[in-house]
Length: 132
Image (cartoon, rainbow, N blue to C red; front, side, top):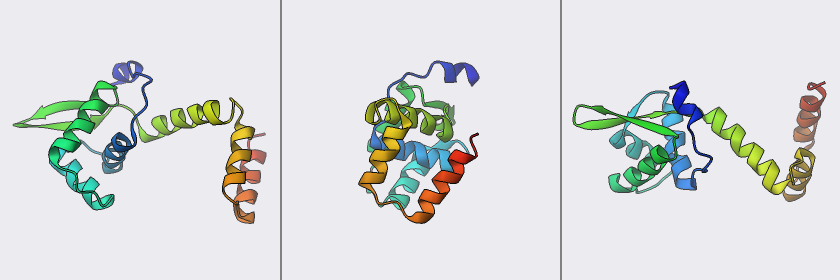
């Protein structure tokens, strides 16, 4: 599996593909398309059909985020990338794209867009102080 992780394309997941991945990541085990569809529809209040979910799964497989293995007449889907790995990559891209490569710029923009509570500010300060 480690070899597959090195072959991951840099193509990001779409919003719908992320929902599919989140369901698989939260499960912690391989899942069939029927299980994935049922959980997505319940958790995210969707009405997606198997074919819709199949499309998103196929795209995630092509992008290198999932692997599928035959189990009888159906397939199980396994994540090749952890949620943490994907999240870290997305954060780095966000800093690069929206903070001009500087985390401080991104945090300042975020703080302007969303009023931070005193508790959130204190938490951020403690995290920064802990980095020394």
